[in-house]
Image (cartoon, rainbow over all chains, first blue to last red; front, side, top):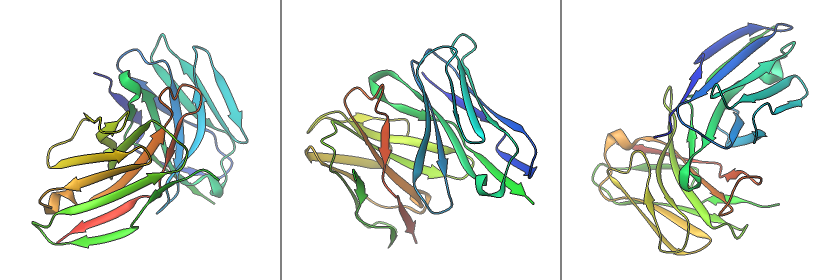
Amino acid sequence: ELKVEQNPLFLSMQEGKNYTIYCNYSTTSDRLYWYRQDPGKSLESLFVLLSNGAVKQEGRLMASLDTKARLSTLHITAAVHDLSATYFCAAGGATNKLIFGTGTLLAVQP
Amino acid sequence: DVKVTQSSRYLVKRTGEKVFLECVQDMDHENMFWYRQDPGLGLRLIYFSYDVKMKEKGDIPEGYSVSREKKERFSLILESASTNQTSMYLCASSLFNPYYSGYTFGSGTRLTVV
């Protein structure tokens, strides 16, 4: 059974600093997704990672996938306040189910 | 703009009531999903459907049922609402093979059972 673990649960960081959110999954998965959720809003798709070694970047966010280690990372470079949100990773399972991690609440302090 | 629409943004229901949460998508997607979101637990899959009248249990189906009579509509039913079903409910849809296209989420229904 596919399980997804994400850490940390909460991340308070200063503007301008770098940090990484980690996402581990328990069994083979052929796709990994990252989503952003603002308070009271729905989920916004950030990245879709489909192969080992995949790396995608958008602005200050960069996501990577290591299928051998069953690990994906979301790296934040030089954080700004606008990045404050909850970030979820999710792995694609059998029968096209999408299994989520617990989410990381990111608070960027000035 | 393609959409997944959830009929209610906020609902307050009494314990024991039968509750219907509706979700409609306009993308001709085969797959539809219901999740509940709770702090510290992420999104947990309740039920999903890959075709009309087809359904499969997710990780937490107890206390819920679903109905999919038309391709575009997927309903979540709480047969007898209880306070532990107070939560945010999110609907999502995808193509039968979402490998490249991914999943689209609705804006959520915040349900409070009193």
